[in-house]
Length: 255
Image 1 (tube, one colour):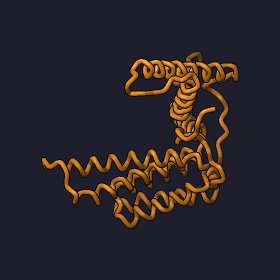
Image 2 (cartoon, rainbow, N blue to C red; image 1 turned 180 degrees about the horizontal axis):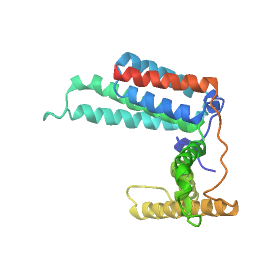
Image 3 (cartoon, rainbow, N blue to C red; image 1 turned 30 degrees about the vertical axis):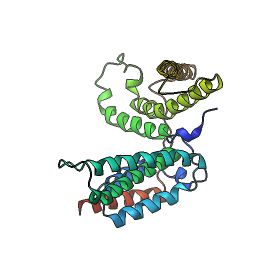
Image 4 (cartoon, rainbow, N blue to C red; image 1 turned 135 degrees about the vertical axis):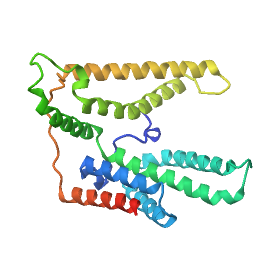
């Protein structure tokens, strides 16, 4: 079984109430809060960070290991920014506070991205995309020939979008399974052993291809068609409230 510590993109809502919100409302809010996070003052940034971290608590604790790894990564990126101030100097201690704020911005963006991925099924976003494109194309369908059909997934862009987004969680799972299988067989990844690393990389590529093949077979067995029926979720009151909050954040950025 794959270790979920390495998969920050898995759908794991836990006890979070965010899973009941409309996916489009959450996507709009994610874009708004990400945009605001990268330019806001320290006070607003700390507030957004605190809210995001509070909302992250109900999610499964398996995300804590990944949070630590991401935190180290953003701190390293911020430190490099301070070490190389860009005016010919190699290091300036005066840039460290700004580097810390920059790290907090990156970490806050990750937290809200994690919240979105953990509480949202990407297939729901894809369904809305396909429905919107169908609505745009509908007036022009009568002019097209009756025998003309759109090729494969190109006729269902929402499904293609969903499969692309699902690639990240599945590649993480494939990596974990490959690593655990290697450890069971006594094959440990090491910088000093390039051959073993290449073998593991080969298995990762093969596993990813097999996963794609299984997905294609599963879609074919279930009779997938680009003209599939789509059942869309209606907006509730709190979904509209989240949209209003996202618009307010966008408006705040323009002030």
